[in-house]
Image (cartoon, rainbow, N blue to C red; front, side, top):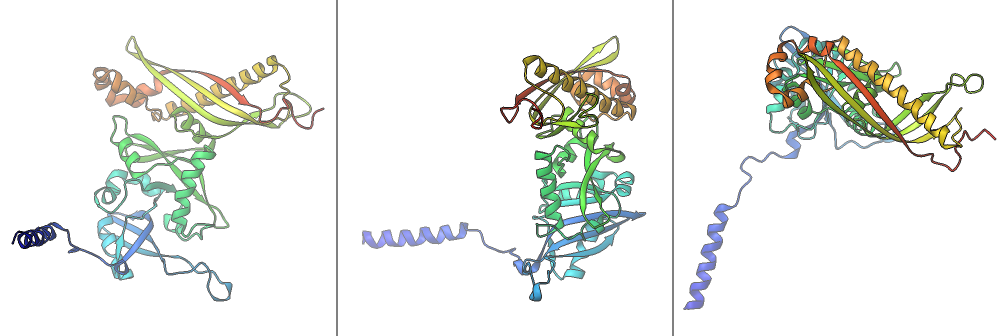
Length: 388
């Protein structure tokens, strides 16, 4: 009898547990979804948004019959009074619902970025539960839809290639920046709503490459920065990981017009805002460490030689970084985070200065001092290889 009661108890327990299990009441088959890899947004008409989505075609093989290459993606164009409306119209073309969880990149052209509030324009991707907040954002020169037509070099889609380019170029060359939806919102919702976004350019042969930065002020694009200024801003904002620093030769005759290379391993920048007599003074320092990548005209056979070489690099970097700082002051765009640092340090003063911060930043006295450390020559020879 006891054994029978135990058996009944186990059966009842299993039945009760079954009621707690979740079911697939809202399941959607994979064949009913189109996986979006990238999206291009362009606002060329008042109140109308043009949308191009790149859908991955997983069933396509890399090569077809006869060795001909087949595209592993398809681009669909829609438009609407909002991105939400344009998204819903994708089904009319594809016959499937757009799935945003695998999206790699969001592309906007310069004109759209200059005339639209970026956070307002991209609000759909912040609200939708499928879109990843880590999706990267990119500005393009020319129509963004043209960039999604570019055939990728190695990746399955150009959207994946853009994603990899930003990630790896930022970590190895120091000439590219990675900004995702999260970082963009954090920057534009801060006390100083200024930030930078990477810019891509389409070459005549159909190759897309990174080429500088877009300057964003109050959620709209207001200008650009060059590729060299990209490196400077990354260094000044502690976003520079690794890259190559070219040091011009200074000797006359042999080596004139050439440059030597330093493999930068790390750059650490600090800032200290100081308020004196109602004016702002900022003390900035940077510490740069790296290896000698190549020598063309400098001999490092004695300690004095290395000391002079390091001082030359230090002076060059101080002048170069200060030049970029002065450029941001000229434009009245605080891209260094000084205003946010001041807000954290002295919120009472910031409350008084916030309204005219652009003008105050332009007039601020910013000082910059640096130190350079050579870690290795990457060889036992402390002079150019061709020299005896």
